[in-house]
Image (tube, rainbow, N blue to C red; front, side):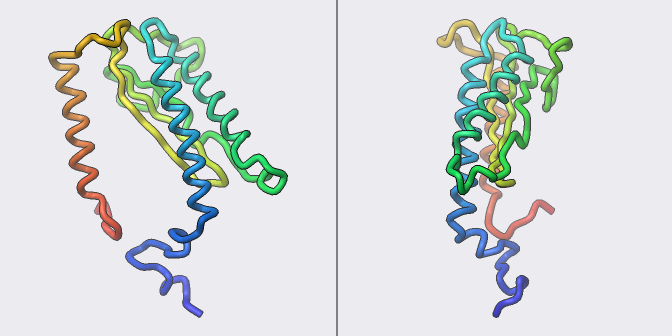
Length: 170
């Protein structure tokens, strides 16, 4: 019988990669996170209260997770929010999920960075997106705001090209 050390190839446990039950949990968790992200994007409109949007998205994640793997056999699976919905606006770098009494409203032209995540049985899926809040879907963004969005996109594309099995960030 192989030892745990021999099972690993390049730091990745091969059993993990070939276990359908684990992959199913990741996929189901990702579906819920993506639905929640779509809802958050839809709710990020001019005048929307950030606290209210975060609460609605978190409630949607919990409701969707309750319906996922809901048979008697899988009812006891641990599930929940792994990363509460955060909407960071403009100069706020990240992880802004305000309390009700400290919330603000989204304004025309705000850059809203949305982060969230959920888990099924400890298998986490996170999702994030950046939107520019606008009353008119057809309006174009120009100037410094457009430059920031393009720079972030370019940096993400460069980081994606560096991802490879067995590589590390050090």
